[in-house]
Image 1 (cartoon, rainbow, N blue to C red):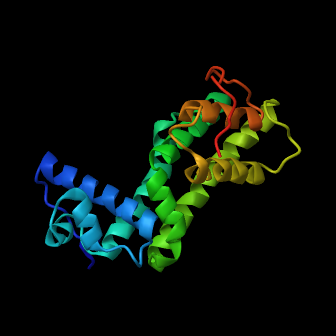
Image 2 (tube, one colour):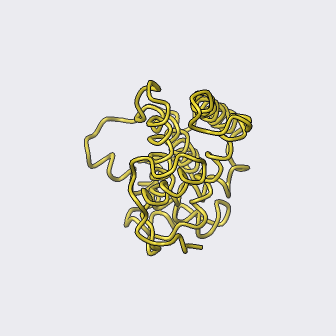
Length: 213
């Protein structure tokens, strides 16, 4: 059993805070240097801890990558859980696009690591994340189908393709978003909603042209 799969002791906020700091530092190191070149010594130095502390709070380098990837998986689950019921399909899709855009941008470093180091993950974890992504896309496709039936979206595009496009363009923000850019995450979500045909669905006008690259 790997360290990441073992039950973690409940030692209060200090323990959880150190885990979060270590995982954040691991993400930065893997994003900067790559998983193979990055070391637990590099990670420990960033958080001011010893190498043994890394193993105590999270585990091996492989466990660190595993935890980062699981965070990506939990992001998709969390977006669906927080987006409310599907009763109002338009409002529901607006909520999904907004929350997912904000979540990807908030997790920009973990997303960068995930896509760069996907081949380093265990086969079981890759399959788990792929299945959750399939369910995520399927859910969006069902909402798109509802919106096509109501006339809110064009009916000539396959819902699955539209859903894949939505997830793809949002996921790609991890590559180009800059916090110094002219648009906030919510304003970027507004642009995405306009692109898929939902217009300014209650999010307000962007404050500047999307000039980020």
